[in-house]
Amino acid sequence: MKNVTFGIHFVLKMNKIINGLAPIYVRITVDSKRCEISAKRKISVENWNIGKGMAKPISAENKQLNSYLEQLRTMMVQHYQELVISKQEITPEAIKNKFFGMNDSDMTLCKLIEYHNTNCKETLRWGTLKNYFTTKKYIELFLKEKYKTSDIYLASLNYKFVADFELFLRKHTLIENQRQMENNTVMKHIERLKKMIKMAIRYEWLEKDPFVAFQQKFLHVERGYLTDDELKRIEEKAFTILRLQYVKDLFIFSCYTGLAYIDVMHLTPEHIQIGIDKELWLITSREKTDTSVKIPILPVAMEIIKKYRNDIKAQVQYRLFPNIANQKLNSYLKEIADICGITKNITFHLARHTFATTVTLTNGVPIETVSKMLGHTKISTTQIYAKVIEKKVGEDMSKLKEKLSIK
Figure 1 (cartoon, rainbow, N blue to C red):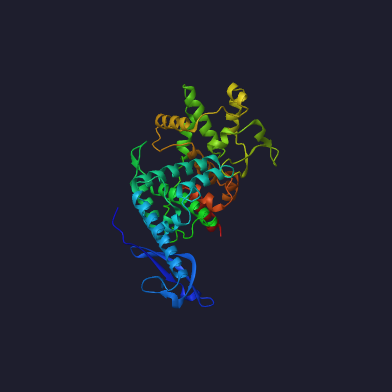
Figure 2 (spheres, rainbow, N blue to C red; figure 1 turned 90 degrees about the vertical axis):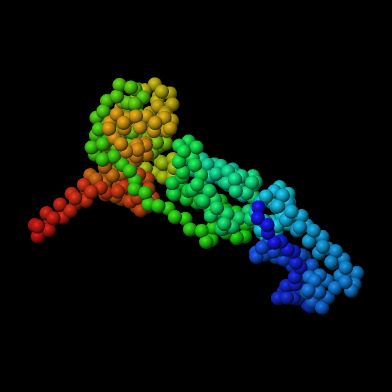
C-alpha cells in the first residue's frame, strides 16, 4: 500500500455562528481529499486559537474541551491505523464511517449484497437472483485480490473502485472455458453492483454515488437464429438415439411457439385452451417476467404435444413434456447441430429467436403480433430479438414494385 498523508484538524464553522458561538468540526485529510465531522461542541470565536486548532486554555471549561478534542483525535488516529493494518483503502470517508460506529451495524459492501439478495428472494426470479450470486462471487474475488480484504465499508467506495472492478472483470479468466469475459457480461455485473448501490443510497447507508461519472457501454449484439434451410434440416432429421430425438422435438416445439426453456418445462395440459378463434392455443405466462402469453398452436407444435401425451414421466410430473436440465439440453443440441451440418452455436434460446424471425416475421406476421406472442411489453424489445432478414426485405420490395408499376 502506498504511503499517504494523514491529518486531523479542528476548525470552526464561521457561517454557522449562533449567539456568538461557532460549532467545532473535525477535519479529516487524506492526501488531497478531506471531509468534516461535527464535534458536537461550540465555542465563542474569541476563545478559539485558530493557529493551534484548539480552545485557549483560559478556563477550566476550555481545558476540558481541549481534553475532549484530543480524545477525538486519538480515536481518528486509531481508525486510520486499523485501515492500514487491514490493508483497506484509506479515505476520509472510510475513517468517518468507522467513527460513526465500529460494531456489526456498520454497512459494508458485502453486508449490502447479502441484504439485497436475502430481501429480494421474493421479488426476483431465480434466474435473476442466481446472476446476483455470481456477481457477489466476483466482488469477493476482487476485494481479495485488489484490497487484500474480505469486505470494505460503503463509505470507501468511489469512482476508482468501480473502474478498478471493471478492469478486474475484463482481465479475469473464466475457469470453465479459459477465456475472458465479453464486454456485455462485464457490464451486466457492473449493472447489478450499481443497482445494489442505488439501494444503499435510498436507505441512506451511503451519501455519494460512486457511479455518478461512470458510463456503462453495452455493445449491440446481433441475435442469432436458424434460417429456413437450417430449421428444415433439423426438423426432417430422425434420430435413433432417444435423448437426441427428445431434445430435437423440444427445440422444434420452441421454434414454433417462441417459448423459452423454463416456460416449456412448466407447461401442463391446463395451458392448452380454446382461443378466441375456437382453435387450440397455449395460454400461459412467462416465468422471467410473469407476462401473460397467448399463442395459437401451429400444426408442427401440436404434433409434438400429441407425441408426448402418453409419456409416463410427463404424466407423473403433470407436464406436457418430461423434465430435462437446461445444461444437458444445450449439450445435446450441439450434437444435433454437428449431425445436421450446422456450424452455428445452437442453444435452446436460439429457438425463440428463430420463431421471431424465420417462422413469423419472415412469413409476414406483423411485429405487433409477434411481440404479443413473445410476451414482450415493448415493441423495441421485439425489434432487438427479431431481425427481419434480407429475404423478407426483398419480398416486400418486390410487392412494392408491382404496386408502383400498376399505377
